[in-house]
Image (cartoon, rainbow, N blue to C red):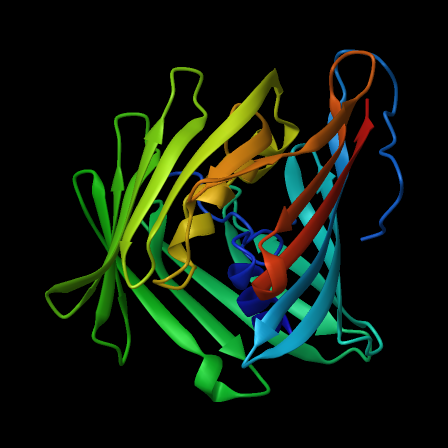
Length: 311
């Protein structure tokens, strides 16, 4: 099921609960409640539960297909400790998986296992490190080996090159002086097939992402002036948020939602402008964000987020 969720969320432009962050050392994702629990109004609140619900309708070979994904992501001490993901496709019963994480002594996630409601392990990520950085990621989807992959990584200055065992496609990630991803370019042998360039503003928020190649886009991003609670949580093991993706996945919206300094509150996608609905508690902590993208019959996305805090 996890692979299906990843594909569907990629179609909606937002990869969220499926790519948990995994690598801090190179640089240093439910319920559907109507409102987040503030915990208190004190200034030392920390995120305890992040609820991310997605309702996606898109055209698949001319036929409308609807999926609903509800994710409860449990957080402790600004680290993800577990998550529950439930998916329904075309009004089918929800399939639920529990995701758990294992970390090494440095806090790096070394294992991510998903177990369904029947107690069966469905898929697993294994992350290996060398000299403190990710050297290999292996994904095993137990139901169908065609979805399995092994990524290997090499490092050279400000670039990380990813190769996949048995594939001619490689991807190069380029970092800036702040160790932020500013370019993702994929090659089939030596021929560039996909390129995404990222720029940031002075506040540390993504400003623009431009893609060329197999997929082309020009996105700009808008933000409020309040602190994004997801940045602290998802910057834990920052890089593998990107290193474990598919070569064709767009990373701009992922950066905007999870890795920017302030809260993402709007965007312009290829000329289509969208404004999100955000609510806050009395100390300006975000407690909800509702996003609706209406691209007509081809794609309709509703995303509802709820932020729950404790002292």
